[in-house]
Length: 187
Image (cartoon, rainbow, N blue to C red; front, side, top):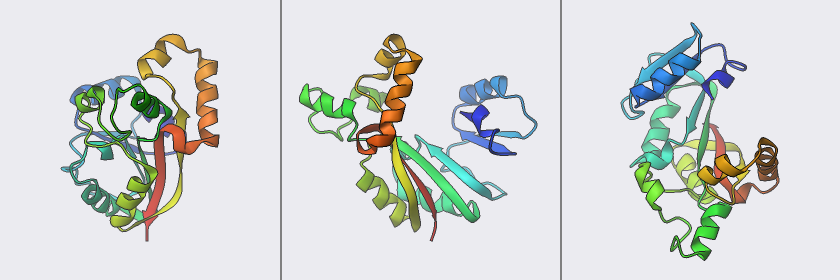
């Protein structure tokens, strides 16, 4: 994902708590305009402000996601935006898990969620509540990919064309996508 950012952004700062992950980014992305910061978001304290902050798969790990949103909104330049992506409790694959008895409720955490350190999965309503409680305004929202089966099954069984079709279908059915996203800005 970091490589793709350079198509639209002159400079990119990547913050992650995993040195191993950052080392992989450094190997793949060759740019003098890339800054890698090994820190947890709760500890990150930038000296500069940003036009865009991507929070992809961060909030579901936080004990207090609203405080992180409040804190990170102070890192924005005027008219800056935060782009958020989180797992969707209403995803087809989670709803199937409920019907199969693998989950009691759609927002329960399964073993994989717990292994990854998830504290919650989101509905659009919960994400909106967290964003607005942080004093931000949602300017756009949607979904990413209809996902009827696990990532492991998709990777081993689907062609690129089939995956692309399910990504495109997600644009038509955002409430059922595996992930939901929001664009938020300061009020």
